[in-house]
Amino acid sequence: MRSDAIEKAFPGLAAGSYEISSPQNYRYNCIAWATNNDSKWWWPDPQNIGYWPSGVPRKVTLESFISAFESLGFSVCDNQDLEEGYEKIAIFTDSRDIPTHAARQISSGRWTSKLGRLEDIEHELMGVAGSAYGKISVVFRRPI
Image (cartoon, rainbow, N blue to C red; front, side):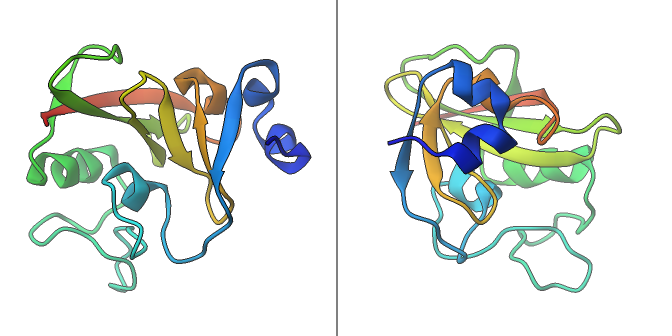
């Protein structure tokens, strides 16, 4: 299944292949989804509204996001290729290096993303890059 609204927001998906894998849901966001959590919204807001790992600065900076994923056992790696025995997460940032999105690699080598308050999708990683989410800044891996 495809969506005109998704393809308008993410033109890179229109040219490639993607599939909607779940209906819209307001309970969780892309950061939570990247960690396999669909029960709460993850964000380092200073008001403590969103969930954020304990001990990690509640700042919307790349450094804070790196610390958050490292606190979960992930380490920075140098590629987005599928590696047997590892799960991977990619962090996207805007032109100021502010985190905007996270995607998780699935066993097929494709990626899964929660698109804000929209659906979850399976896609090629670069399909969500561009004006909405920016560029890939960091890729993490963690042993399965």
